[in-house]
Image 1 (cartoon, rainbow, N blue to C red):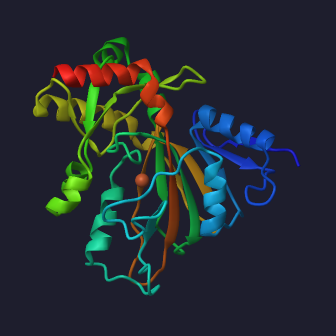
Image 2: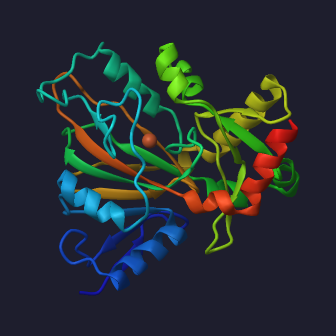
Length: 298
Ligand SMILES: [Fe+2]
């Protein structure tokens, strides 16, 4: 079988075919997919249904899976469950249930896990049960954002360190953490400008969890971060994916943002399972050494 990688959008998003992720993955095939993620940021595979065990096995190829903790019903496992179905009974959850309110935070543009001290390399989302309409996931490229900035704006971004916090981002949609939940998720700090170690291309780590900029006033930081987000998410820059059962999408959390969109959660069922791959190696780079040094000096 020959692996084909066909761009869906010229600058990011590619569809990958000719590979069986579940039964026949080998090191050479994985290397092709791994390289494709660096180049395209978002990879789409179709007709590759997976159960939890199979998804875990596939995720192991990518690096260490992050454990999920906190409010997500799959807390304590490597899965982040995106669903309107109760994890124990399989019944539809009432729309005003706190678990559904929590998921509304995903309607905001974000990269996964930027609020964690070890940032994420990528997420793997498998479509298990898909509503007949709605529930698209939308993507934009923050590499495209960076590369489209004029020289002045690029210079303003250079060296900035951004504080990310999930209680902050959930509060934006009216979801309040309990003090215990908030204590599980203290802020994390990351360089705004990220560099892909393979391609050398830059992107910006922004999104809903980005709460403050080190050394800036809250007001100035909010204005600047909002401006960057607005530029990244212009309608013409968005790729919107209509899911089919058996689809898998892998996205690069270093160079892309995504958001969930609404569906009829009363009459339709939806179950998506996400594994998130950590990127501990990045903590050994000069960029993160600088973050630690500046945080100590702040
Ligand atoms: Fe997400």
